[in-house]
Image (cartoon, rainbow, N blue to C red):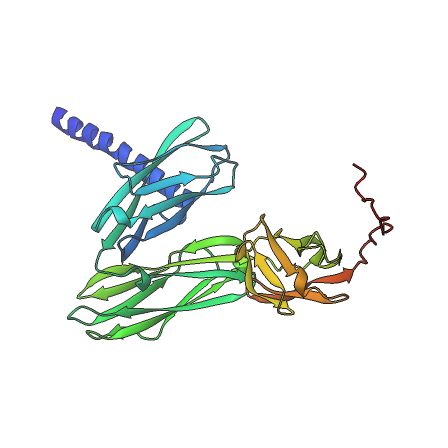
Length: 366
């Protein structure tokens, strides 16, 4: 009887932790809808990849993230921007993986500690990456550049079956962001055969710079592998081309000159108050004697550039208008601006005429 009671007591002792673990796992599944692991797959060594995990406060108390720490790794970093989440609010945990510090397959853990209603919790995440030194960086990443918000970006990647067995494409997995679509022109690849993976990114779904990490899941000889890709793009809002704000000094000037003026110089400022760089595509001076110098080939947001017009005196002509035609490019739109300066000759002041000296005298009073 005592032996039976001991067995029942032991079974009860082990049943309680199992129930508690199941409850915690169910809570974590609801709190972390994107899961708690991510596989970047086989990527080129030297590239940098990122992903995000959403965290949802499913409780009726405030959630506070007290710490995010990475276990024994200097090539993986994890952080959160917002540490306090109200009930029902969603935050993100950002992850950055640098593959330049290792090669081969590697799994890294990081931990997120948080409190809810005075209770301490710790969640564990796993990030896996296969850094392949034989792949070129251009094989699996592309910077799509700056685009006007609302445009649809398209790019294609090639996948080659380097195995000796047939390879099947069993899944196309965009990352957690919106606006990314994927399709493959083939489902099964024979050895040395290639497939085209087409990707479309809708820039109306984001503002500013974004990084997306879609994944292609392939199966070879019953084993599955993830092939990760990376896309960068910058979506900017439609811009209004305001001459007065862009050229605070104006675009038209007239100047006076006479024979004593060695040369005429005039500077025009150009101010970039937008979110995208202003590129100087072309500068032409008319007529030919006009010399034009500009400070930079691109003016970044918040910066100011200058155009300097110079005309030598020997080439100045009265009532002649000198024009500097500047071609600007903002994202995918080009505009032409004329900076003009009109020369106006001023008569020289007459020199006083002194009377002729009398014989035997000099004009020098001394």
